[in-house]
Length: 284
Image 1 (tube, rainbow, N blue to C red):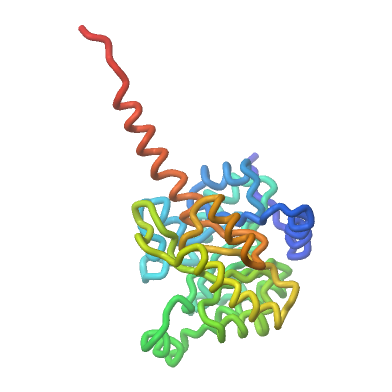
Image 2 (tube, rainbow, N blue to C red; image 1 turned 180 degrees about the vertical axis):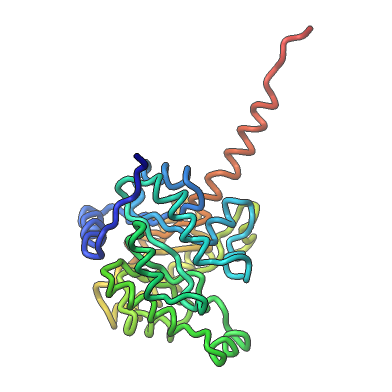
């Protein structure tokens, strides 16, 4: 009989997180783009495992922002990854789904119920139109592809007793997300993770990242003081980086994508391959 990750209610996930916070253990929310990543993230003690279409692309050697382009069916991919690869490899860790709230090809109320039925315990608004700014963003909003659709998706997920996690990239969106979406966890996305084969070469410094993140946490705190804050992206690559950000902001944990699954594979795999190529063979 195959196993499957168990569904946790919103209250159950929050209780687990608050227990870690109370003993001063950082929350680790980690993306898994393939089953073996999910398996060992759980063994390592991750508090939340996230399934994102960007994780699929990361673990196939492409950049995370492929998940923001019209390549494949974002929500369909997350559903299939969850059902066939991630959820069967997880026993006790809550697993959340990164969903595209502006997916006009689905009845989101029905889809959220399906996501819940297969074992996802929460929803995160990714891919998100919040990534886009300027004329393109204004055109998206004007033609019906709105950030409000993502907020509405998160509100419906909460009505289904699922954990809600929100990204925002501007102060105004942070206000809307926390006030109208009433999210449980807020994450300021500081930018694509630095380093590795598909990361950016330059990113906000840790100091800049911490200062900018705190600006957004302050906005959220004024609206909903009990919001849980996680740090993500840019120069947050290593445990030492995480320690710096957590000690200079109100974040109580980190959300990791490339920093946990991609960078944990790239260099060790290269180095191990080179080591095997250096094996000396007997003459003859």
